[in-house]
Image (cartoon, rainbow, N blue to C red; front, side, top):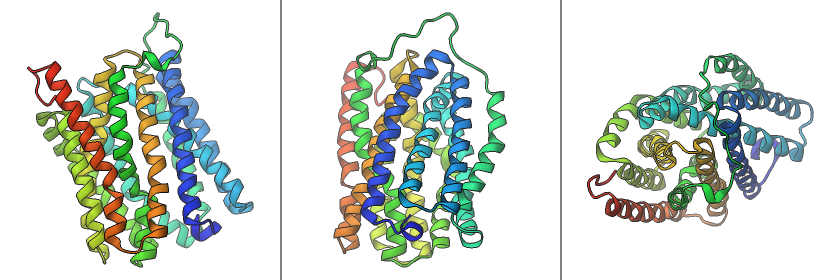
Length: 361
């Protein structure tokens, strides 16, 4: 956006904030729709809509490169894509004997695509042009769409789903979600902050930045299952806490990075935190929901994640705009995760008091 449409760093951060918060709100209702009408049906509807918005983004970028039009379509596209996630997560949770295992396997599969996505996007942007990134993405989504028909519908027949209400969601999810918001402010430095810092502050090329993200995708595929086995032994709360610590170490180490290889090492550490946090968080929600309104609970959890993701780029853009020292930038960037760790440790202690026979569950 910055290079092609000449949009300022602060505005880019604001766009991602609006996009994430809006997407988070609509995911709550999307999860309830999955509970009510069936998760597979909702996935199919929003997956088809997502393809349409990608084609609109391609057309806008190629034929009508008006910044505000593109930004509006970008926000709609990201929101529609996020509407799939509560039903997909709920369906995966129901289908798995051990939800943590199911979410871990899904991350391996999805990140094989993520590993090649940024690198491929860099090649497409450099050869065909920036708009064709969305055209290729649309073709990929079209190729994936038929696979959704093979999903097995898991909606509970004969059970009337009540109208969604926030007070019907387990309050433990809200307490957990507060920590998730702080953590994901740091998690989301992965997108805007990292790429702009590596390009504008360190001078890495677009293709080099793509390789940094390639390390992320490959590392998930290589290490997600070993991390899953570790988290299953040490407990979900410890998985969230250790993953948060790794995020802090990985991002702060970027203040020391001056070459592509150094950034790759930092990204590897960040990815170990991601491997621990991402499937564990979803498994925590499945445990908290305990089979009741699972789609709605997943939607509320995704809202908390989106709220953190939304604030993250704005926070990172602010740091990049007004700070010069890498240690100041990345030192302040990781502070919210420290708050998240305090909340997770507190919630773990409370749960251990309630269930002394299951320490660190």
